[in-house]
Length: 311
Image (tube, rainbow, N blue to C red):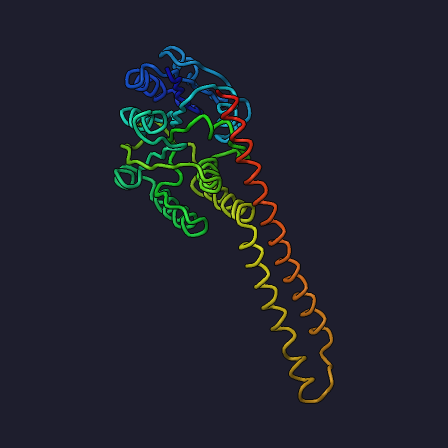
């Protein structure tokens, strides 16, 4: 029988964690529920344990750090990741699990719980969250050619291959963005399904800072674009520097053609310097693209080895 693990990262969720654990215990009785407490100052850990969860502690602050420990420590065939704020329905878990481990149909490596196509915009009361979700969604869809609607959902299911082969670098809420881009880049099989969403109950406060964490997500997108699409990124930079160089050098060339003299040497030298940076940037992108391709090939070999070890 396949082993299923429900992973719940928590920080000060005493008002909701008991219900979340109980709901998953009821809807997925065969699963082991893990709650990782991230330095909570309330009774999150105590309540989770009382309701039947296995409680562990992560001292490094940040959701990314918690997920890193979860993925490293827990062994299972299917992983359900869900927030401890009681905004997602445990009733959707079975559908997600069946898409990860099911002999009767094709299985996937990551199932994304899509809130945005159901009740999110109606339930969520923080309007800038709605704007942020749309912005991140459109950026990632255009930059990485991703066909996933809800990029930042905290409700997902994973195969063992994905979990054990995912090199987490994010420390905070940008972890969902990193997961999505990694899955697309490494050609994992992804399925998105609509899930029910409701706003936090009264008295439960979101830990997500709209502006601070929003900027982190945008920086993460820029960094990942540079790392996963280096040729496009550095060629874009190259075009900018070349344009600057041409603009600076054009008066000197125009002057030379009309007078056979060059008096604007500083502009000419600086323009040439800009052109050189542009050329070097383009070469850097080409070299990094080759390295990235080799890295993808190596990753596939490591993934095959992981599957062999599982057998």
